[in-house]
Image 1 (cartoon, helix red, strand yellow):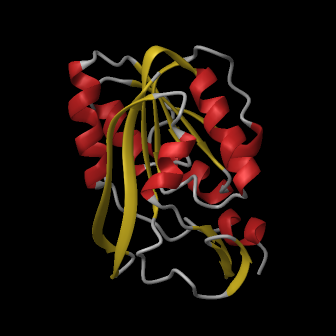
Image 2 (spheres, one colour; image 1 turned 60 degrees about the horizontal axis):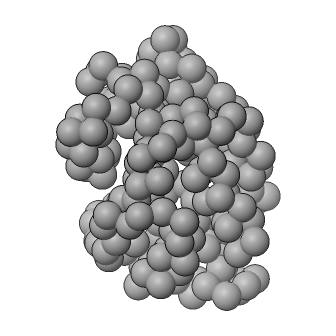
Length: 200
């Protein structure tokens, strides 16, 4: 199965409305910083977009998956939801107070990843916040499948596993507020992550 087919229908059976704990932690700082407009980058079925919208934030959502965007639009038509490829983001400079990327930026080559983080920096307003979480090299899936590049494997679809140093490198134009390893249960198994909060 190629990546496009995988993501197109990835959220057809999704029904949860419960926000991810990472979204709840992100909102604590969003509230303190008076965030008004957020982009949920790689929103999936939109459960975190819905959560942010319930808090009174203006939300735009972006995902490669048609089924995810369709699901979100049905749940909250007021959220502006876009189908597209993160490598070709259509948003203008200085558009958002915050960008939230939960498990959506660990699918790309080194050069693509660098360009995506650069585009994110440009899209944020001055002092804007980035909340990002990616699979880490400590994850149980690391090393599974065919190796296609450093820390990058194809098993069903491509995963690019991050280290703290690699995440720090992507954030070299930001002020890093938090950078840490974390672990939690995800998709019924224990997973390991690198998560960061950074400011433009």
